[in-house]
Amino acid sequence: MKTLLRTTTRIFTLAIIVCIAMGFSYLPKANCASIIDEVTEVLKSGTPTLELRLGYEYSDLQDNHKDSAKALNLRTRVGYRTGEYLNSSVYIQLHDLTTLADHYAPEDTDYDVIADPEGNRVHQVFLDFKGLPDTTLRLGRQEIILNDSRLIGNIGWRQNGQSFDAVSLTNTSIKDLKLYGAYVNQVNTILLDYVDLDALVLLNAKYTGIKGLNITGFCYLLDTKSDADSARDSATYGLRLNGKIAVFDYDLTGAYQSDFADGEDHDGYMINTGIGYTIAKIRFGAGYHYISGLDGDDRPFDTLFSTAHKFNGWADVFLSTNGGKLKNGLEDYFVEAGTKLMGVKLKAVYHYFDTTDDDYNNFDDQYGDEIDLLLVKKINKNLTGLLKYSHYNEMDHSASYTNVVGGHDEDVFWARLTYKF
Image (cartoon, rainbow, N blue to C red; front, side, top):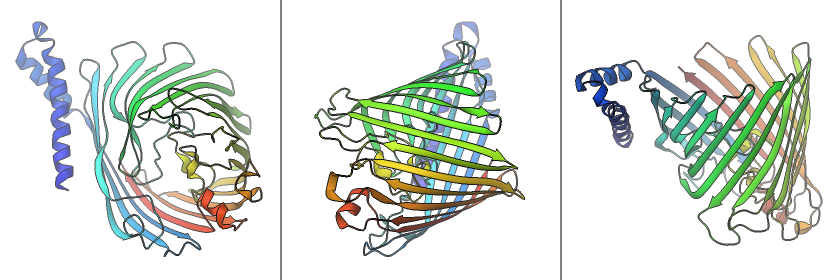
């Protein structure tokens, strides 16, 4: 708590210094006293934010000689956005995760893993400048979510989340076209550690001028600190088409990954498809996800810094797609149904998981299947409750196979209560 208070003081002091510095740069046009009054008003007219998320998670990974994990923790995020001054504003968000019950690894290695280490940090602190027409320049630590978050996201499901130290630019000056670019030099991970980069360049363009169709093109260039041929460095190019026509919705993304900077042997593909049909307030959906695996010397596709929990099952058996470590690749066939009943959101998903390469590691071509269930109730405008369950059933029980994908049968359950204003 003392560390959190010290961090709070430093960040608010920084915000004040930034605002005052901008004001003093205009001293020839105004006197010092009036600038101080203006800066004071900017700070007084700001907007505070608060999020409290009390979460319980139970995770039981079978046949690993560990006890089932149980975690009860409270996530607190306190934020403040200043008023605007000289077309600029500052936002600060402090994060703390306090563990109330810690029967899980890494807190206790006798238990299964839950990726919510206790700690605190500055989750976001950035300066927004809007002095150019239809343009926002953002400098500092920030969350970045691009497209459906399959390659770049904030991992908002985990209690700690992910943010990026970056400078980003958003422009909407051309009708129906949103242009986004960012330069990232550090990723702040859900494990409360930091990944330093030489550069991560993000380019994204979304066109919405066609009824029922959004077209998004993207290019992500990753250059890590490593100079070795085995570096994660890669270039990812892709196209997303999504939209809604009458009672149908659809989403199609294709991406190709090649060598960039020091990394070699990148030649991977990713395909995400989904279609939905809504009738009588019930949405039925189906889809197919493909992630290429090891093919000769060519590496598996790397899903970069994505919100992976959103895809390929909530039990998180296939998180190794982030980092390009899923050597057998992945084919994910799924069906889902969802509705809202008496103010309660209900959703059920069934996945069947297959490999893309039957030969690697000498086991047959099926991973397993999974059932996911979700219930969400908005209690009032500030308070939301959630229950979530996932059961993964492994179909091939060879030890060599489980060393590749990281799991036997697994059951995971979550209960959460979130308060926001």
